Amino acid sequence: MGCEGIDDMSKESLSITDNRTGKSYEIDIKNGSIRAMDIRQITVNEDDFGLLSYDPSLGNTATVTSSVSFIDGDKGILEYRGYPIEQLAEKGTFLETAYLLVHGELPNKSQLENWETDITHRTMVLENVKKFMEGFRYDAHPMGMLVSTVGALSTFYPEAKNVQDESVRLEQTIRAIGKVGTIAAWAYRHTLGYPYVYPDNDLSYSGNLLNMLFRMVEDKYIPNPVIERAIDVLFILHADHEQNASANTMRAIGSSLADPYSALAGAIGSLYGPLHGGANEAVIRMLEEIETVDNIPSFIENVKSGTDGVRLMGFGHRVYKNYDPRAKLVKEMADKVFEVTGRNHLLDIALELERIALEDDYFIERKLYPNVDFYSGLIYQAMGFPVEIFPVLFAIPRTVGWMAQWSEAFGDREQRIVRPRQIYVGERQRDYVSMKDRS
Image (tube, rainbow, N blue to C red):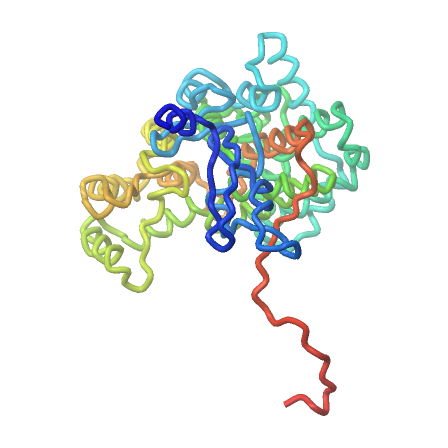
């Protein structure tokens, strides 16, 4: 009996007893998970559909297997294809990281040169796309322009619908990475009423983006190397982040075999929400509302008491229960940027807020540590960007992750069109009542 008990305990399985029927079931455990379909066998009778798991917002449900990025929230770890984010941000470039996420391995010298050339020569967009963007109102939100224009690319590249062709998928991935920066920059210029600036193939990806964003009357735009590197690092940090809301949207739309630009537009739309891509904007607005360091103690007390829904923005994360590794890197980069741009007037408030929060038992117990949004907004604001452009800057690098996630799904034989179940709680089997008899 003792030996049998040990053997049972060593099995990679889960034993379940249904107290409704007294029946017992053994379900296999693989990679720390059970298959949801395996619990469908648990029924009360022959007419029973089978047991469902109820998981609002997919808080504890894995819908895919992936090798693109890995997060250990308890330990504060983020890896792309197994490489620590710290090493990539310190030693790599954005396009090198993009190659890694898309292809699975870091490129050698010739592969990187070819990759950079391929993307650089796809930053130009058709004049019809330019005319399309010129049709937006003068006060159109740049994120709305980005969603619409990216979605419209499917009409300019009809071959993109051949998603089952691997070579077509790669071509659209390169095209999307190349063009999204141009569209984003032009959306920003549109809000200012400035003429659009065409790409400069002599510049790096980040340098060219700065050129399209900020060039005025110069014959040749020369980006500041510190700002250029800061953009590169921020883009590396934002390139992918497992199955977040927008990545899930990208995969869900892609599961219907829609073209990638339609899926990409959906992902950008998901990012548009203030709970996702608008988080660093919320941080800036919070710091501006606090106004001075002297107001921080009363603000903290309001957060604790929940006064008028006051929230500490930029702290805590759905996944990370430790210090967000990206936040440390952004904070280090902020010091270098401020040496060029001048110190952001909100930095003192941010630093003091962080110091208090990291020492206060209330926040420590709740594992509310600074996340990547806490300092990234300060950097973008110091560079001269209005808060409305923040989610657009987020979407540019995340396009790499979205395309990598979308493409990966085609190699997974278990993936079908996404079709979640529901638990129906409404009325049943009611007879139609004519208008004259309705109360």
